[in-house]
Amino acid sequence: RPAAELLARVPSEHPARVADLGCGPGNSTALLVQRWPQAKIEGVDSSPQMIEAAKKSRVAADFTLADLASWKPAAPYEVIFSNATYQWLPDHRALLPRLMGFVVKGGVFAFQVPNNQYSPSHTLMRDVAAQGPWAEKLANVRGIFVEKVEDYFDMLAPHAATLDIWTTEYLHVLDGEDAVFKWVSGTGLRPYLDALDAAERERFAVEYKARLNIAYPRRADGKTLFPFSRLFAVATVR
Image (tube, rainbow, N blue to C red; front, side, top):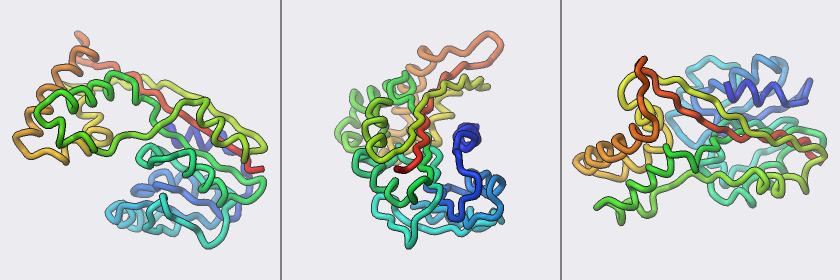
């Protein structure tokens, strides 16, 4: 849904070349192909497993393995699109203007990132990491890199003819026990758990689940409400 809502705000009718940065298994790339079936579309990701899955998806795009921190395309694009990727990369003040430089004049640079780094789901994760016996081991675990809305305006505005930045909070209605823990286990929590051995991982999970279940109590109907904010930006390149 965030990918579709971001794409709906991209004011580009007939781009010749489009890049999907952090394409994953090709889900977001499929949306781009659906909107611009005549464009040459390329998906880029740093994960060999994701690129392999994307190539098997039968999405009509070219998929390339590359690290976005150093990626440099052979030619510029009319649209560079990214759905939930830049939060894993540091130094946005250098990264985003560099990537924006690979868009032609009048083209579009569009992205969205999770904007929940200060919500209980993430502050409690960092608290458990810092307060347990594993604190030293987890001190340098890769975090989520997301700046404030006004910071993105400052980064992008000097390079943009038009700039649209907004946030949206989605209310996820989750089922089952430890629902928020299960949700974050696939993304933000993974680097922490991967750095621990099996016994530490179990102890970390127990402590983190207990805190999450206080912050996000399960309702009488079995549902857990999980507000989740995302930040969007669509810039037309100057």
